[in-house]
Image (cartoon, rainbow, N blue to C red; front, side, top):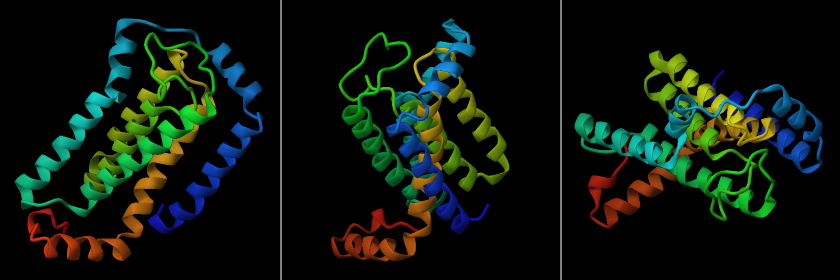
Length: 207
């Protein structure tokens, strides 16, 4: 699917899931799926779900920036879009968790104000964003990146930390945000590069 089609289809799908969530249309489906999936709280599942946590996610961002600097001594457009989508998306996820306050099917052992809510899934968002970026930068590894994202998603359901609608929303939100930043870069990137040049921070130029 090309980027322009993604920008048409993904926001529509995102809006449908969001409206259905607010209207309570997912309630029965969520309970049915949660009841059908057995609770599998074992070390292997907990270890794998950790790969969608904040620490591995930010470590991946650092790795992506390091690889750019090693290859070209500046950020690539793909990595810059990834970083922008990451911070914008995490802000959206945190805000929705806090404002909607959807109870989780099974409470987290430890949760703060911005993580106690179930909708949407932060782990799924982070994993899907890595998959969207990785698929763009290393196209031959696209299947591997999406297997990783879907596996993280499934661990959230196995641990009963999320409802189906939580992970579904995040699986759509992440690639949409990344694609949005990439498709619109011709509008904002020249402005960004002009600003960093004017500030004599050419090392921060994005090519």
